[in-house]
Length: 317
Image (cartoon, rainbow, N blue to C red; front, side, top):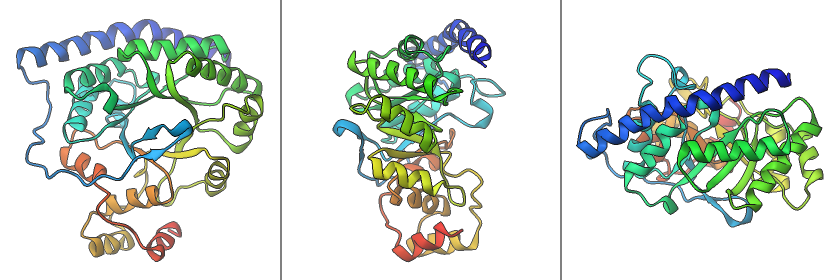
């Protein structure tokens, strides 16, 4: 209901900017004074072999692998050990060579993410930042305002990609939100715009409303054993990049099939599962947490290619 969206968004907009700012300032002060903020030594890790970027709308290049929120317990910035988790994870990711960052207003950690970007020493032009909005109410004006809130929380002037995080209750509302995202792009607040969790019907509605401004990306859950082949095919046919979030969700990494394929390529079963996603033509946002070895693995899936038979076998799992 609209009232639920209103209360959720407005409360977060008022509270999260203060709460996140406190954590972010502490993190930045720690960096400036040389104190530890919990980052992990990544110097002993071999440089990951990365995949080339994907080309999305208007020639915008998007990294094949981005890093998402720290873990399920910290999705909304709360829980044991969550303070500073997004800052440390983002900083570690940038230190090992990752350049794609996937965040959202609802993660309640964008100030930390922005602080890590600022502290990393990596040029902003080399980093691809995706964020997501949940405007309330579902209007054009609210959508534009939500983009500005995300930019403010991250401390950025422009987003590389902004997504509508979840569809509204009706096609008419989605069309209004899409108009706001189109406006944000026209104003230079975003290089590319897209959606998340959208069905084919919902995509068709916003595309019909703005035929010259189709979504660049539709981000949905996609992993081995959990994939919406019909929507993937529709997006591919319409030139919409289908991006995976939670690409290891519910994947049995001890499955003999994955383990066997991994041994053939001298990689981990997690890397096999991630490479399968990218060979479908889908970039991904992963959540390795603060484990630098996992982050290095997730990023370094460019050193091998699954055969067509292996792809078919994994797709049938």
